Structures are given as structure tokens and as C-alpha cells.
Length: 396
Image (cartoon, rainbow, N blue to C red; front, side, top):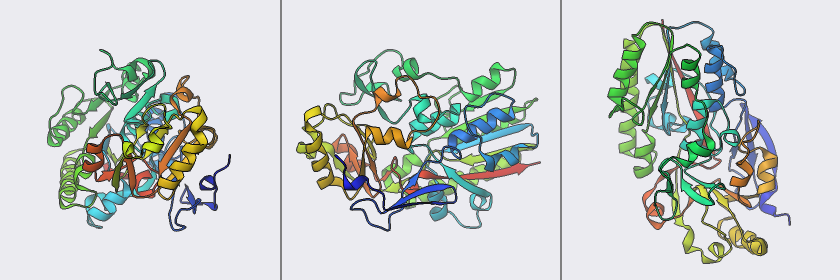
């Protein structure tokens, strides 16, 4: 059965990004940006691996490679969660520190979300290789939907195991660990990793401390803002603007104190403002499903009862056909939406029968509370979610 909503009106490229416009019933003015895995956040990690003389896991980021040609005492990557190109463009002054040091843009992973993209910048693999697909994942090894970072059952919230099931089944060797194992020096700076800096100011002080140590080193810093604030207040609220301006100023101050350092500021994804709906308010769709959706509210992984697929397609198209693309699993694999490379042995078992991907301002949540709470969202295929900045500061 071929559905009109999966047909392409026309396909072209802009600046290396694949743009798919005018699909099915969708507004012809919509731009849909697909991940460019030769020019992605995983590529940044591979550029770092290459710089340290280690085997890469895929393409390097050419935009960054030219800056890495020179030997610096320190290479620092600061990832500001959610700070996509659209976020700095519309929240910060054109002549400010971030915009004047912007050297270009590149691609997040699919989905453009923290679990998938931060795994890719941590190991140089793409999502089909590392298996960290989104906030909630179906784990075929235990036949359960699990909230990855919390290690809890997606519906009940109960802990699923004493050890992290994500690390148990999809563990990987990170860039930081590979550099250290090879005799180099590399550090994490994150509120979730010892010594657990509690504020971003503390993280920046830790970066400075590491950069003052002897020997060449790599420092990777993760910050949960501005994503945290934008989820609650929206991408362009006064609260979000204040947080983003604060981040810009504190990084500008940090950079001024560093020497012989290449500072790279980037993001895992961007966000858009969205309306939320609750999946269980659509009983005809829920009745077709084997389990509730996983991955993200804007990238729904859907397991459908075998004898209900035609009914499911019809109901989903009627309710969400103007806001979501509905891809059968075979199409998802054919498109290499989760990336190229050697797939994790359990990757295909994680995927349901369909993937519904947002291309407009609607998100489908598993709880009513989340549908009412979240304003800024990510995980879909809009340009604002997919395109991330590369900001480079050279300190001689």
C-alpha cells in the first residue's frame, strides 16, 4: 500500500543540506532538512580522533579540520544543549561574540535530540551504529520501553534494572577514553561526571584549570542550557534570551583568559516552539498499537498490530497528516535516516513498523502532563531543529 503522504514533490540541496519540500498534503512552503552524515555532529568527534592520530569512525568535519591543522596546547569543545543556529540567530546580537565567531553550520543527527546527538559527539558513531536513538527507546533484549538517561520504564516510571540497560546493551568507547587510553590527556566537564560542577561558571573554571595543566589535551564540556529553559518557556521568551546571553558572556570571558587554545562552541540540536497533544486522546490510533510510542514526541517509533496497519495509516493520516510524515520501517532503512555505517546488531529490532516524524509545530506526547508543559521541542526534521552552529575561537 503506497500512501500519498510519503511521495516527494521535489528534492534538492542547499548548502550541503538535503531539502525535501511539498510532501503529500503538506504546505509547499515547508522546508524539511535531512541529516547530512558526512557533515554532522558525529563528524566533529571524528575530527578530534583524527587530530590525536586515532582511527576515525566516519567522516571528519571539513569545516573544523582546517582549524585543527595547527597544534594547540588545548582543544576545548563546549556543547550548549539546544543552541541551534536559529537560536543564536534570533536571540543574540549580530555583532555579538557568538555570531562574529560563527564559521558555519552543519547537521545534527536524526533524531536531532540530546540522547542521539551527544552520543555521536562522544564517540564519532551515528545513531544506527551506537543505538542511543532518543529519550525513550524500545529495548528488544528486555522487551520494554525505557527512558534512557533515567533507566526507568517509560510508562510506569519504575527502575528497570540496577545497571543502565543502555550501557549494558549499547555501550561504547568514548573519544575522551580513547585519547586517554592511547597515552594522551582528555577530560570531561559535565554536571553528570566527577567532579560534578554545579553551575556553568564552575564548569568554565574547571575548563580553565585543565587548560593550564602541561601537555596537549582535549576537553569536552556539556551544558544543559539553553535547552532546559526553552523547553519550559519557549525558544524566544525573555527567560531564554537571558540564559543564552549569559552563556555567551561567560564563554567570552573564559576565552579571554585562555592561551594557546582552540575553543569550539556548538550544539546537539536546535528547537522550535510547538503545540502538544496527548497520544491517548486518540483512541482509534492507540487501539492499533502494540505499545506506546518511543524515541521522541516529534519522532515516534510505532509498533502496530499486524492486522491493523491499513486502519492505522488511515487514522494517523486523518489526524496528523499535515504535521507529520509517516514512514514504513522499510523506507526508514532505505533512506538511512539514522545514518550510514555498520548497524548495531540490535538496531533494526529497536525500530517499529512505522516512524512518524514532525515537520511542523505539533508534538505527540505519551503523557498529558508533558503535552501541557513543553513549549520548546526538538526531534523533528525542520531546519530549526536540524541545523547547528560551529563557533570557533582561536586563542594564540
